[in-house]
Structures are given as structure tokens and as C-alpha cells.
Image 1 (tube, rainbow, N blue to C red):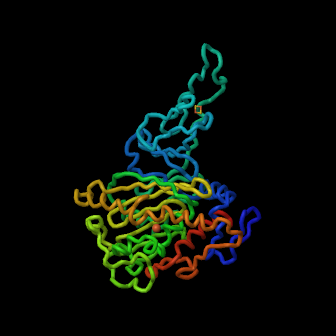
Image 2 (cartoon, rainbow, N blue to C red):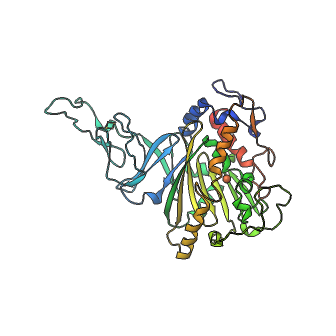
Image 3 (cartoon, helix red, strand yellow):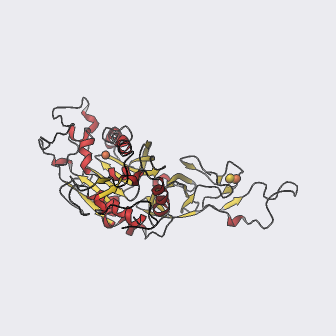
Length: 411
Ligand code: FES
Ligand SMILES: [Fe+2]
């Protein structure tokens, strides 16, 4: 497909190839901000549990655009662009908290929790001199509002004409969200990390079961996850979103022999095995489920660690990953202690996720200088885009990602 306005030409092979320039070209990056991040796409913003009461707020992003999500005094959820209407200053710099209004540091214009402008400092000047013109109408200068919807306590926003949120997610995705968010949660804590790579390299990573037990040595070594376990890949919305899942109880020893995988040392033992003590919380037997919602939300269960990850683009070769760890309010003390201990598995320094924080940088460095026409090869598991309950040596979810990307970008 060739678009007159397109900065690149997609390879003729389609989604089994992705041009390396797509993760480094500044023109592509700018086009994404318009077509994906301001386009007909839902973007995860925060959890309802983070804004429980009137006046509670979180600051977040849609693409590069800073956003405030605030609960107003009637309990409504307001997603607002975090940008003062006067000169564009960032209005709210804290990650979250509780407020009655948002008052700009620069000249003290003040907005209520729904984003309406309530007061302008010195609007009438001083002793009748200066101030705003008499016809200045503060009702016309509120914060830009963003359409927001919530599903099972996950709040999403969109600048574009996206379909309703539940349709956007699709039945396969809403089922896993409903499974995790089936009772009240509370946030345990946060991690933020800078990724030295384009946001799409991380989007590929969480759709890639092929690397999981190879790059992450901890997984197969301590038998938490192997490709030979029962599991699968569920796609939805035509491949835009995916779930990679596995069932730890189906571990069978010995099946990685002869693969040359560096991590497989069968007699290695943890000095303190309580790190990976876990409890089966869900009756479907799934112990690892990584759900990727296009473009930048990851919702995960890894044994008893529950978390959402928000991917924030910050330029062609940099992004940020915001982790929010959660638990159920009614956890018994033993389960809560397990969750806290297992949280060492994930996050920027997590035993099974730290490598993802640098591998995208390896790709970014490796493709430097690649000319046009040099492409990634995405043929593992075939060339189609389809759910599967076997063969997790498969890149079908990555092909699904690129299909979504191409359709939105017109590439
Ligand atoms: S920039 Fe916010 S009040 Fe002037
Ligand atoms: Fe990974």
C-alpha cells in the first residue's frame, strides 16, 4: 500500500515485515501523534481506584499530551488536557492527590474539577486600570476536555471518534479484564522507567511470547514459564489487542534440551524459594497472562503479581513505562505478603522483566544506519493473524499490532 503523504513505503510482504525506519524516523513519530494518539483510539489513563473521592485526581498522558483525570463533586470522571488556557503552562505537576481546584502557578488562573475556568487573577485590573477587556468571557476558556469511558475501573480517553470502549476492547479482552477486576482493588505502588527505545519496540515486546523464556533467564530456570507449558495467544479487534497466557501446573521437565538456550540450568535453586511461592487465585489454571491493548496498555498477571503498565512515547527513540501494582482489598495477610514479595519479579529491576528495559535499546542501536528497505522479519508461527491455543513460538500478536498500526497510519 502506498500513500502519497506517507514518509515511508511499507514492504510488499505486508505485516510479516516492519521497516526499521518506522521506529526511528521523526516524521513517522509526528504522524503517529496525529493519527494514533489524537486518532480514533482509546488510551488507558488511570484506574478508578486511584481517584476514589470527589477532588481526587491523577496526572497521565495520551501520547505526548499531558492529561489530568479528576473526580468532580458529583462523582463524575473528567479527563482534561493538563494545559492552562492562558499561556499553555502545565497546570498540575503532581502525579496525583486531592484538590478543590487547579490553579496555575504562572498567573493563577483557576479551574474547577470539571475544567471550567473559575477565576482570572486581576481580571478587572488594578484600580480600574489594566485587566482583561470587558467582553472577556471566562466561560469560553476552560480546559480542553477529553472523552473518557471506564470499563471495570480502568479509565480510558480518546481525542478521536473511537467506537464505544467495550466494542473497542472486544469480548476476548473484556473477559480477562473482568476476571482480574472482579472485586475491589487497591493500589500497592508505582514504578516509572525510561526506555531507550521507540514505544513500538515495547509494544512488540509484550506481544512476543517467543522471547519471554529466552531473554528472561529467570522464567525457564525457575520453571515459572516455558513455551512447552500449556498456553496460547488470544487476539481481539482483528489482532489489535492480545493476551499471551500460560499454565504453570503443566510444566514438564526436560523439554528445552538441545535448544541452546543460555538460561537453562536445571539444577539451579533459589537460596530463598519463598520469593516464588504463589497461590492459584483463578480457577482457569492460568499463571501468567500478559494482555496488550493497542496502543500502550499492558495488563498483567504473573503468578500473584497484578499490574497495569502504561507506555508513554517521548520522541522517536525514547519512551517511558509507568507501572501500577495493585491487589484486592480483601487479600488475606498471607496472600498480600506473597504479592509484595513476588513484586520483585517485575518492574524496572524485576527478575523477569528487567531485560525488557534494555533490549529495545539494543534494537535501536542495532538498526542505526540501516537504510530504507531493511526490515524486521516477523514470520514465526506462520504469516497469519489468528488466536491459537498451541504453538507459542509465534509472532501472530506482533503481526496483529502492525496491522492495527498500518490501518491507522495509512501505511
Ligand atoms: S499560563 Fe496559566 S495563568 Fe498564565
Ligand atoms: Fe519480556
